[in-house]
Image (cartoon, rainbow, N blue to C red; front, side, top):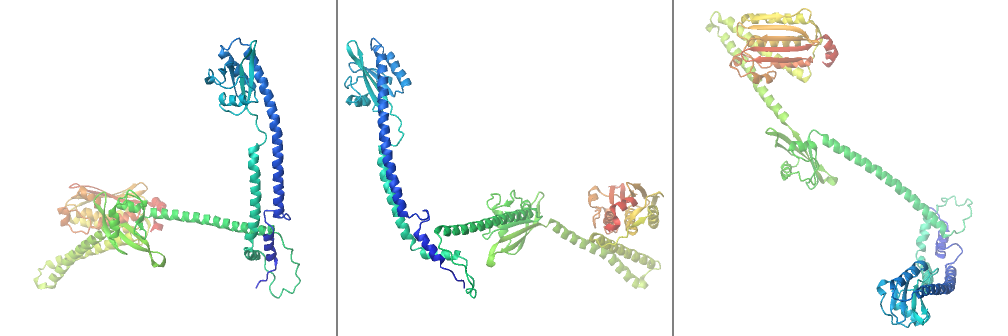
Length: 631
């Protein structure tokens, strides 16, 4: 436990015995007496100086007034008559400008105002004694009646002619400026000074009385400012003598140090708070930017189920003109709130939203947000356009239906012919071989179907192990033409093969390229009537090789050209439906072409035949595209 010295008591006593506002060694009562004496001395000196200054100013002003009145009187007496009042008014105006006159008037012997510095006063009678002196009641009467009681010194001077008194000159001179306060100020200053002295004495007594109950608090506060002494066991060591009790100034200095240290701590905390606020603002803006860029729609509600956020994708999916903070937006219709309310807690809903062409399905998923103590903090709604998924599901269903049909047809044929072969007694001599040929054809058809399906799925899933190498184009194309020549001959079709010997080498998988060209030739043979013509040409084209297969068969309608390379796509023509087929051959050709960074195009017209062009990159283009690494 820390042991404290007796310094806090001495420090508290110093606060009680000496006020911090007064210098050391100067008691408060003595200071009040000195201040009172100074105030009384200053008041007396001011009154004496003011009296002397006032007397001297009055003497100078009276002399100046008499001189000015004499000058005006002489100028007025130079006039033979009072009839020219304008001339007399100009004399007064000149005296006012040059002599510092406040106002002036000239009266005739009857007391009528002949001229006045105020033109409105001319022509009025004055009822006072005429003439009079500046020391009698006439001066006060003149100030009141001629000059409306304005402050200043009034000078009266009679006008004399040969007959005697002819009139009076009355002048009003302004009072001189006061260099010192007047008597009224002294009458106010002395009582105020005495009141200040009394108030200071009252403060001194009240302060001493009020500080007594706080001595204990000051002791504890001062004790917290003293560092603790050495722990027990070190008390026996010699210590430096305790410092003498210090005045309250040290106590205040130490408090000031602690206040400054606390202020620095608060400033550091404020700076840290500013940095954290900026960091939070940056994180908020970054989170908002991420939410805005989400491909899926997002709607956020608070604990009261009020919508607070709608991102850009949600606004586009729902056809809203507003996205962002949605708490006060008039663009959010009530139907949106009803739609969200219908999702249910933790559920999902398929909503048909309006689109440019009809509607589009939206999958709305609800996720509750948990706050502190497992309380609800709001809800999160995710919106996703499932048009592509619905189309994929529909395509998958169609695919399963078509593949089932394509597999069922040859299987039914095989089963029927196997049953017929089992009953040998019912067979004619030449039917056995015909049945065997049919079984072989249907089995090959099923094998081609399964092979095409496997190759398509491997290409689309990226699981096909293509072996890219340099392939001699002319040798490959001629070999493929020879492999289908027998089929064309069986239908009495003419197969025209034009393949130059100097074609650039292909860079690709020989087997896959062979499958693509074979499918094109097989389609041409199948959909060309007996006796028709089929042309197979190969040529160098733009760093690659173009293989062209043309026929004069039934052709493809214009409305079917866009989907001719889709899986299971077959025309509704009667001639096409009579031929067996899976609708996978041309789809496989397109996949193989894209796998080799090539392309396949078609030109066709109903009844005029079709022309397919397969472009594949040559050696230089294949090396540039690095197809082997891509595979």
